[in-house]
Amino acid sequence: MLDILLFDISIGLWEKTYLRYLFSSVENTVTTVSLQESRRHRTIDSYYHNMKHTNHDRCLIFSTHPNPKHTINTQMIVMLLKFFEPKIVVHLSDEKGKYPNLFGVVDKVQLYLHQYNFEHYLKHNSLCILPLGFNNSICSVPPTIVKPMCARKFVWSFIGNCKRESRVRAIDAFKEHFKANVYPHYVRSGIAQHEMGEYLSETVFCLSPKGASNIACFRTTEAICFGAIPVIACPTTVFDTGYCFDKVNDIVTPPVIHAPTWEDACAICMDLLNRPEDLQRISDECRAWFLQYNSYVQKRIAHSIQSS
Image (cartoon, rainbow, N blue to C red; front, side, top):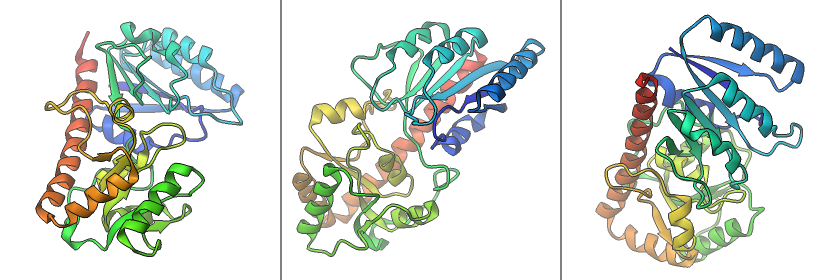
């Protein structure tokens, strides 16, 4: 049995469903720590009391997503890490790489799962880079069957707002190269999550520009879930760092479409439309990578629990 302490200090963990999927291979219970300080202490005290009377393995999950209402108390996180001695730690939403101090416990845990890769973060055998996964409402598990490329309605799509210049450049480039009206290729944010899944199921190329501050973006893995091919434009060094994962089947970066500029990305996509077999192959390879990597993470979770 794995006792999971979910320290919910962010606006709301985007990927709870994805975490449930990753930990589904092991029997577990989940305790959520409240944002309110008084209730938070009561929950931790109760968790500690139960911990003393069981020999269950423990997992601590926390997010360092910036929250205007609740300051991220890294000292409390460090205290919890030392106090509860979890075998597994899951560190979410460190998009800017601002919390290298939290990696100080890596030699004391069996597995430290963390999102986002940074050159200035230390390397250790217990560390494992975690894909961003998918939104809580878009799906519960990656679909087992997706629509083939040749049967999809939209050549390309982008779902979200255009507050960032990188997103505007991406949409403008694809609109110009494909000589198409923006709608329904560009869908503003605010649609229901299940609708987002439906759009991705009908999309061949999904534009995945930079997130809030990192080239890695949820759109990439969400697109892969539904068989759409993510398209990313950035310098190679940025891509190789931002999308660097543990090596699985000799693959380090996902086999998405990557180019230095959005214009170059458009040219690659237009060429692939004339080669339907290669187009389908890339979609299949992206999904295979994501499913195999998730399986790899699940095996590491199980192995960490079995280790003394």
